[in-house]
Amino acid sequence: MLVKKREDVFITLLNEEMSKVTAAGEAFLDLVNNYENVNDKIAGMKILETECDMQAHKILNTLNSASTPLFAREDIFSLIREIDDIVDGLEEAANRFGVFNVKDIRPDAKKMADIVMQAINELSTMFEHLSEIKKPAALLEHIIEVNRIENEGDIIYRRALSNLFSNEKDPIEIIKWKHIYEKMETSIDACESVANMIEGVIMKYA
Image 1 (tube, rainbow, N blue to C red):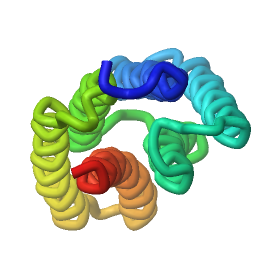
Image 2: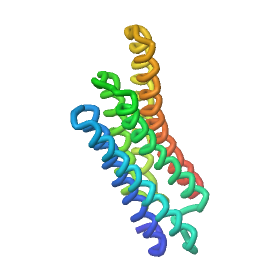
Image 3: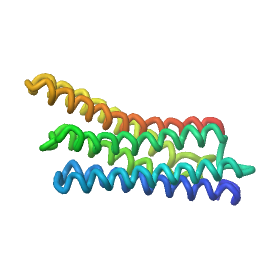
């Protein structure tokens, strides 16, 4: 392993965080693809978001007491904030389904949820290679793939907005879905930000 043993704890903690993010992504994907028992699923999303927050605090508490973290403290702090944004965006989107009394999920929302899940899965695999940060070939492959997925997400997001404004006549529905799409887009962007932060760390080691 390329990192010092006393730094291994951060690899473990970050991978645990990504496991929780993956669980939240899967729960959101299930919500939009199987739109039933909606209130229970929304409540479940809140529980998962809280678990991610607790894991983030655990990492930050460890960071405060660590003499030698995995990499620069400010980088870990920024990374945790961006990871948190992934789940926050999904939980907020799920919450809006209830608040806005959404009856049916639009096809574009399902496509965006799938893109978010693809990006999360790629990040999760990328984090499994964090110990290789000084020989980052595998990490860089996953970073590139996350960027590709995010670009695809941008296209789907813009198409979703175009479809919404072109085909929906009810202004209330436009407001509802524009807001939901924006929250989902926030999660996609956060995935790319996480990948870009890891790339920045790699450059520091180069």
